[in-house]
Amino acid sequence: MRGRLAVRGFAALPVATTATLLVLCFDLLQRLPGGAAVVDDVGVVRGNQPLALSLLRTPLSLFVPALDLPVWGALAQVLVVFGLAELVLGRGRTLLVAYAGTVAGTLYARLAVDLGPGSPFGLPTADAAVRDVGPSAAVVALAICTAWRARAWFSGAAVVVLMAVEAAGLPNLAGREHLAAVAVAVLASVFGEVVGTVRSRVAVLVPALPDTGRAGQYG
Image 1 (tube, rainbow, N blue to C red):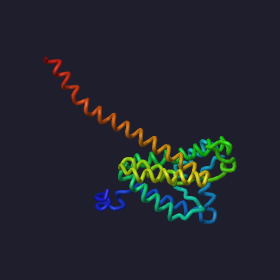
Image 2 (cartoon, one colour):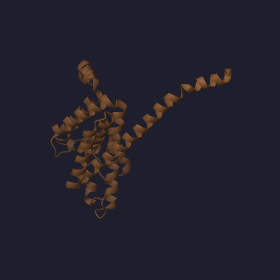
Image 3 (cartoon, one colour):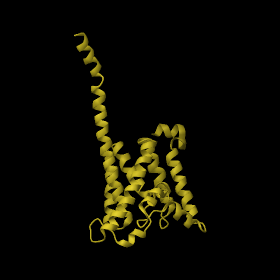
Image 4 (cartoon, rainbow, N blue to C red):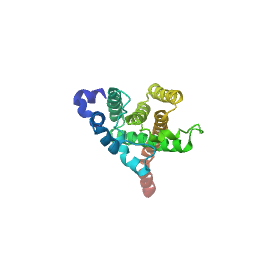
């Protein structure tokens, strides 16, 4: 990773760089007169929207930062975590995990509102009008998958524990969406581990098959 960065610099991180610039552009736009309405129509997802509309906006909602949090935090998270994921997981998997984490949060928000505050996994009906968490769900999912792939167990466990503490201390929409992203990331990591194990075993067995066939043919 250091070698690629030393040789190519930010050119080695096109996904992370683009994602960071998109977060910055959306933040600047939503702070301009009339810009908030444009961002709301293009990239803001809420639980009270039709599901098809939410899914249509989800790719862009990933880059819409929260108005009540400092944008520099979102920019730093996206640049660092997306960058590490791009170097460890590759561009395609980085985009896939980021999107999966965001979609998981979006879908869980709807389910939690339907369950209601009486359920341990539910949320108040008023949360249906709250904006989703933007890039943070993708950052959580990518952090866990990257740590798993790099065998950085302490870092991955720290992210999971912090998200659990957040959800327990602040039982709001953002905390629950982060937990949904954690669940998706863990499932994706386990699935990738299983697929990798199966592929490695097949790769060991397959080269022996032609030899066995030839031995039977000439034997």
